[in-house]
Amino acid sequence: MSLTTFPVPAPRSSLMVRRRIATYFVGGVEQIPGLVDALARHGRLVHDLSVDVRDGVRESTMTCALLVEEAEVEALLARLRELPAVVSSELV
Image (tube, rainbow, N blue to C red; front, side):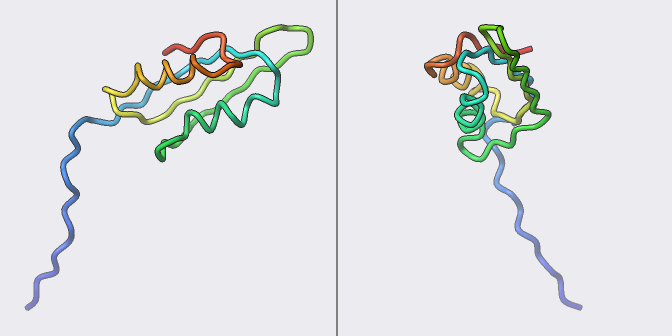
């Protein structure tokens, strides 16, 4: 009888956690691709994406959930806040 071996994944240095993020931005629907790209960098999967853009309202809202390493959450929020269209970004 032969034994089949399966590769064992390497242990992760930190755990991935699911975080909900709300981002408030200006510039309308044209800004959405850049915001999603900033969230999805490094292979992150964006889940439950919701965008609220209204005529006559200065700020729009984008909320989503994503898996991110816990140690990287604050750096991700800081990168979002640096985008020219972003007014604020925070955990919800």
